[in-house]
Length: 157
Image (cartoon, rainbow, N blue to C red; front, side, top):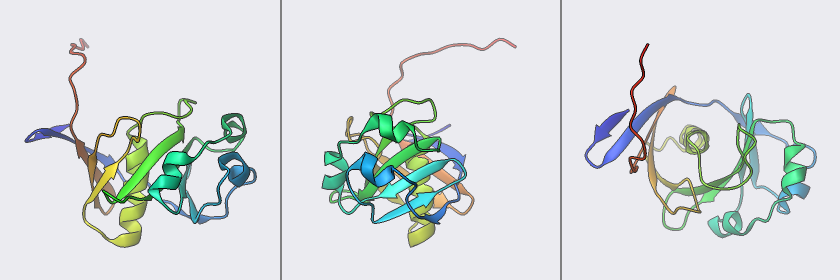
């Protein structure tokens, strides 16, 4: 992690994905038809038409849990930023709620690959309203944003 002014920046491997047909049960579980569905080795990124649609989705979480993947993210172009996204199912099985690192990483990796844009402002968590900046760089993605210190510790090896 690197401090850049008042932002903290992390460097991650980009997540490669490709356009796929929505898996069986996805459209019904979301209650909306995606504009596009992208799949990586483990995750689904579901592109919706507007950020309002992302905000208003009322998914059937038990039905989402039956879809064979690690994480499900919904995203759309934003009106006040490049994109918004929210996590519907995380790698830990958490359903709905604030964003996790892999969520903007997936979105930024995929949108960066599609648009060739160098930097994105995003709202990775609709719940907290916190913004993040993503910098796709080929096989790497840098994510920076503000954070609050909540714990300090020491690791003894």
